[in-house]
Length: 268
Length: 364
Image 1 (cartoon, rainbow over the protein chains, first blue to last red):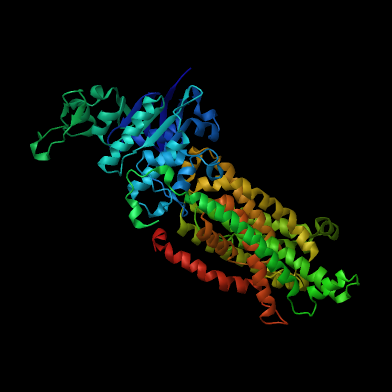
Image 2 (cartoon, rainbow over the protein chains, first blue to last red):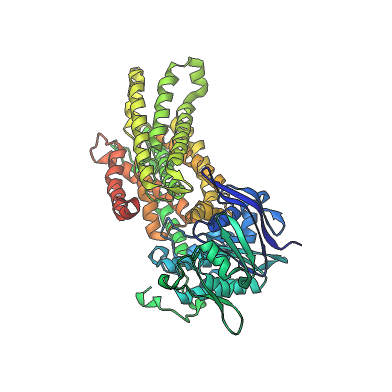
């Protein structure tokens, strides 16, 4: 049985301008796949094409099934999507928001999953708070708790389920960045699939199994972090010198951006 | 919860009191209270009025096995009872339409009266009254009392669709655009209605004037029966919308991702709003603010979960409209005020209050 999330020859036009020029991506379950790239390279557009939020050409399949042929509830049963930002219209409590991730929504029978999900994102005890009273980072984690509630078990009937995350750590402090990235790792370790758009290349190097580097609407490079995150590749796509080193014991790449004055004049 | 509880690291999640459950239980209790309230208000409504007829006399006559006096019979069975039924139908319709529309537009200020849906339904109703009178008699008899509510339904449907197209882009509704589009729709419908008035004869003019005031005073069994099926259908759709509207609170895209057939929810919501508003407007004219006030109060009391919000809105809307109708009937007795005046006095301040609290979102 096929246990991948695949995008084939994805093309997206925004207005008249084509912003994705035939992108291919294969994400394996049991792995964390990170999509990285400079602003405007098409990371989020690719993710939104894969989740059906923007009209596109090309095919997306999940566990071998063509996404276009699935009903919303069938899709929701195998993958959950966290948007970059979420505004909530009405005064819901934190627990109510998370319970929306249950397949029957707020009318679902009582389940311990929402409270467990809140605990895993470091929000135990927040259940009764009003969502709109929380800080941006807390709201983001509530949304993540909702998303993991939806696909709580990584494997159901031998089929992997998927977490699709758009910059899951964007407005989080460093401690919670680790909480969230650990969560994605453990989800993948238990057999689920994770695809995340990432900004932070160091976190990507630490947590991703596979990195997809985007440049100007195309995939520039795909592979393990050490293969993709190299001096030359980053200098070319990001247009600035980012020397890559490796941490001694595990050989994980890490980046230490240099101050401008220390760089050679023609870095790109 | 106290501010101290923000620092919760290491707290046992299962020891957490379950506040959602509290709100759900509270909502269920509130439903019982509202049923009681509606029964009490209904009873009062039957006994209140300009004439001396009294429910108690009538009941004691009935219990004693005596014939009802003709006056009691006429006043109770042919005037107050249809008025009561119409009040319940219209009140429930207006409140539920408001709640559904707010869920659909993701905005507590969306209300059929304010954003021009009632005006659109009203224009269609007026058109039906005027044009209907020009049709051959046989056709008129064939269409019967249905023509006005059905026309109002289509008017409401068209204006809701138009409004949604104008004010929603990429699944996000601009409040300012929605309110401004509502003003434009209302003005347009008002102007067109004005033109139609010129083409109406005396009888139609009387019907239009009476209808335009917004009142339950014209209640007859014919009107109740004409409005009943449309309103019943629209209200019956509401429970099936609850989960979808809850999901829509996350935004259209996110609602789709949790498994909601967004387009179906939108279409059904628009049809339900058009049906309930159209039928209500057709039989009672423009009665404003019930659709704003009722859902807002209920959200304050038991939260925005549509599973409880929609049924409770129907109950509270009915009770509130009956109460407003009683005030309208007794305050200047033996004459009566148009009920729209009472609901506006109650509702407009609430609208302004919500507007004031959400000024930031509106960019004002």
